Image (cartoon, rainbow, N blue to C red; front, top):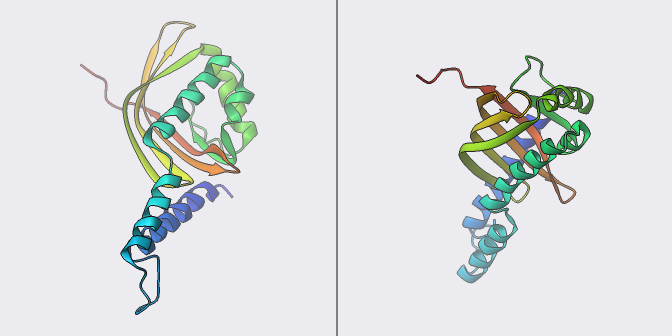
Length: 177
């Protein structure tokens, strides 16, 4: 059960790659029954239109950060899929269900965190899947401390809503000199 998110993203990515390959090859028509170039172009355009933009994926972090600002762990957890996995920055425990994710954020939010993206790499996998990875910094208003961490968010669009299916965050291993 704990690997569902990874399997699902793999399947989504594989399906997206297959759909793009079929579109590039004339929509998957059988040999000798190829579609005209205009139909192939139309199919490619339909695929491109239905995929999220990089800016839309980037906005998902903004929404997550705004949920942190509410101080409500339930609102933050609402952004995760029911079977989502969180590998948090400030805990050694893998959080693989809603109760565990809420528990982590109840403690994390006590420090009044605010996140800021320092470096980002977005990869749209298809119309219903995307990954946002990079480096972010949290500033904790409670004591003014800061922590930089590497992050990866794997998103899946479920029922018209983007949800986090996997979120990994780990403090930077090397200290800046």
